[in-house]
Amino acid sequence: MKNTFKVALATLAIAGMSGAAHADLNYNGEVGLPINPTAQVPSTTGGFRLQGNYYDLGGADLYSLGGAVRASKTAPIEINGAVNYVDGGGDDVRFSVGAKYLFSRESDPAGVRLAVGAGYSELSSLKNTRAYAVASKSFGNPVDGRVSATGHLGVRYDHYNVGDSDKASVFVGAEVPVTPKGDIQILGEAGTKVIDGGDFPYSLGLRYRASQQPFGATIGVQRLGITGNNNARLFVQLGYTFGG
Image (cartoon, rainbow, N blue to C red; front, side, top):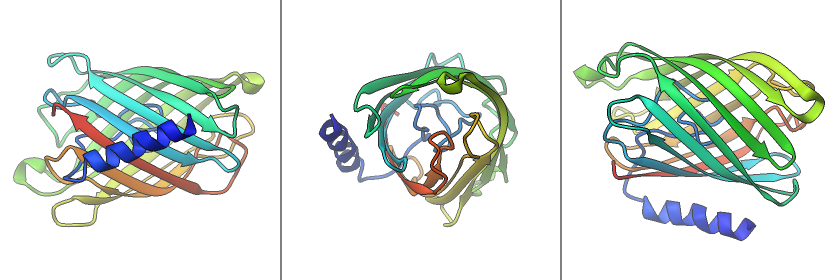
């Protein structure tokens, strides 16, 4: 199974050498940053987003293959999910599933977007039920052709079966272009603890995502804050949008 996930990641990399993504996903398959969701959903012309992820958990390796699709062209509803495999954490295949609804108008890309969502996921024996609300704001007007930074602010509630943990938390994130065309971005996020006995999660990465191209890749460091390992670890994401 470990080799199967490696082949899937390699296939995505080869298939998409020509450019980048319309929207990246987190390890649960939600449109968002590497850990948390954002107030973004697949566009009306965006097709299906497929993304392979690798996260070093410290003592175990997480491989996931996630996907997100818009429910319809008229309804701003995202359906998402992932297949998860933890090498060194039970060596079994588990699943994530979720949905997100965007309240704000999509016709105003410079305004504040507000979305709510919920999901359920499993990482080996660790089961998580979550709900969240998140706002996203672009700084600068994309209509004028200027590359914009985007900020995110959200609240979430997580229930984990381990220790019967229930915890509300807040998170922030940002995507900041570092090239004139915005095809290379620095992204980061941080939040308060999501599980009893855990640590605060964060990620910091470098993303390649060329305009109007289907391929995207991100590499960086992350701490999910749920495994008891406090060190920052490597993550890699490779994604491709089909039909966009």
